[in-house]
Each structure stands twice: as structure tokens, then as C-alpha cells.
Length: 433
Image (cartoon, rainbow, N blue to C red; front, side, top):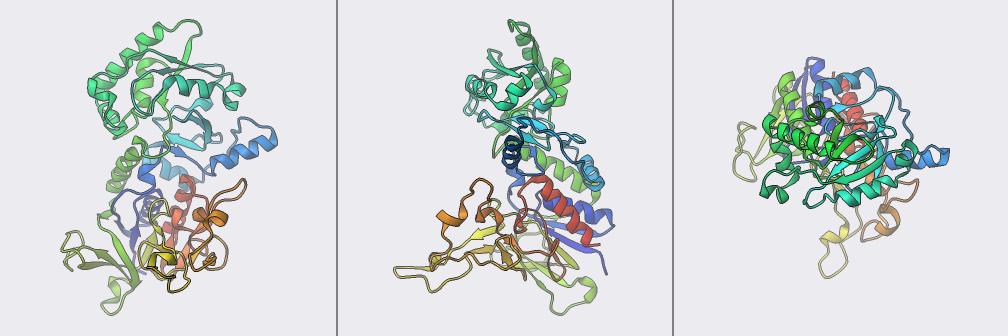
């Protein structure tokens, strides 16, 4: 078999699949456009959903669950090559959120502050007049968390200037984070924090928790910590954090380093190739907006070009990323009933694969002419994920069809976590060998 692989999707799963296939010496082209779930992530690197972990801890009487299974050697190698995340060997990290919660994670973006390494410490939160950052409210909420009580952690908001220019009260987190990519600006912030720590009365500070402002191209918390002499790091933002931009920057560096070709276009179809030389590949991946020639060059809307491959990896994400589309029958209704019942979900591209709600059978959650009963099936309950989280491509392992594999959130019934996406991508990339 020739080694031509097309990976569709440039999130965590797609990157892991491309990395794994390249390790085997395959030619890899990665097709993507727009931002997916990975680009909007907050920087927590989970293996299992963190809320499930906390529920299990409460049942077992462990308020601060920390034990974790070691990573596989291949996952360790991928994390090392990416150079973005800190994943402890056998323990979990604990991160604070801007909503005032403390929660476990298997690892973290290196810009986030790991509170799991602290015990009996005072954590300082500098006040800053910015939307989404209320240091006093966050400190009060974090101080009351079960993990904080179990580790004797205290949180205190203090007056330390961390904004240098007037516009920094209003600019987006990403813009402020980008300013700290500059060494001089990071040095200014370190000086402000050192001076502020000297003025803190009473208990000596053990760490500094900041908003999501420490670097856009790379995590700047390690350099800031070294300059201040205390652990410094960001709080976690649920979606739209600069951590997603740091992932994209690290991803692009890794793709360049391993020699993966990029095509920044939208894939609209995967199909068995008809005619042509067998050596050019058995599958055709059609791309939107081309003149029919070079797939790297955009053309008039509606025109197509194609890439040919021996195997294709679908890493297009789930509902959150737009890889799976909610399309109930009522969308086709006018003033009367829909023309008939149908599967209420579809992929964002055409492919010879089958959708499922997470079980061994094809999709079967249509409850009426108007689609599924969302108030019954779609929303999560304690101990049960929602149908919207489980829906995706039915796979045997990672195999979704003939020469087609799937990885990440597009796979039905798998946990929607970062390390699950990594494991799926690595497995899919291995199967292309």
C-alpha cells in the first residue's frame, strides 16, 4: 500500500493522527479551515470528564483526587514533541477557573497555575479592572472550595498594577496575552508583582494567580515564575481562552517540524475514487471553492478540486466544533408538517460512514416527525451524558469505513476530552500504516 494519508481537521485529534502517520514515514496532508473546539479550549488536558472524577471522589470520600494512570509511551512522545502541555507522571493537576471553581485535570497548558503542587499556601490574585476578572469574587469562591480546604489553601485579592496602558482595560484577553510574548513587557509585569508581594501583610504568599494573559504564541508563565521567584500562572477560561491560540501556534510549529502539508480549505466530500491511476490513491477528498486545479489555490465559489489518498482520517469534531450538524426534520417544514421522519444529525461533509448515538446500532433517536425529544434525551443528568455529547460516527475501533478512520469528538460514544482525542488520533494514525 502507498503511504498517502489525508487528515481532515486540525484539532488535537487531527494533529495526533498526522504526527503518528508521519512517524511511520507516510505522506500526510492535513486539510482544515476555521477554528474548532481545540482552538477554543481553555488549556485543561483531561483524560476523563472532570465532573465525573469529582463525583467519584465524593462517593469515595476523597475531596482532592490526584492519582492518575501513566500516559502511554506514544502519548508521552507526542506531548513532548508538542511542547505545550505539562502532564505529571502519575498525578493530576488542579486548576482554578475564572468562575471561582477548583477542578482536577490530568495535565494543563504550561501557562495555567497548577494548584495541585501547593499545600498550606496563600495564593495572591492581583485586582485588574477587566471584564471577566473579579479578583475579590474569585478569591472568595476559591477559598470555599473543598480542595482548598483539604490542602489548606487561601486566596486573597490584592492591589498590584498588572495593566500598563489605558486600553488594556478593554482589549481582548488574546491581545493582552500577546503583549506578554514580549520579553520587556513580561519583565515589567515581574517587577510589578515582586513589588506587590513585598507589600502583602501577614501570611507570606506562595503563588500568584492571574487572568488568561500570559502569552499567545507560547506559555509565558514559566519565565514569569522564574523572574518573580514564585509559581505564577493563569486561571482557566471555559471557552475562547488564549490557550487555544497557544495550541494553534504549537500545532503549526510541530506540523512544520515533521513535514506535514497543509491545505487550508473546507473538505466537503470523501468518496471512493472512480477511474485514474491506482497509484494516486483509492479515495478522493473534494474541497470547496476551487477552480478544479491546484487544491491550495482558491477559485470561484462552488468549484471543486480533490486530493487523492490511500486512507483518510476524519477528525472534524463533534457538535461543538461543527463536525456533526443538528438537522431535525422540521428544518424542511414550511407551514405544514415536515415531509417525513429522518435522522436528525448529519456530518458537515459527505462520507460513506454511519452515525450513531454511542451504541452498537446506527442512529435511532428520532422520537417524532420533529426529531428527538431534546428535553428528554439531549440534556445531561448525573451519571448520564446527553445524546448531543454521544452522537457521532460509529466505529469499530477507529475504523469508520473502508480506508476511512475517525478520531476525536466525531467518534460516537467516546469521552470528549483532550487525551481521549490524542489517543484516538494516535490510534487512527497507526492504522494508516
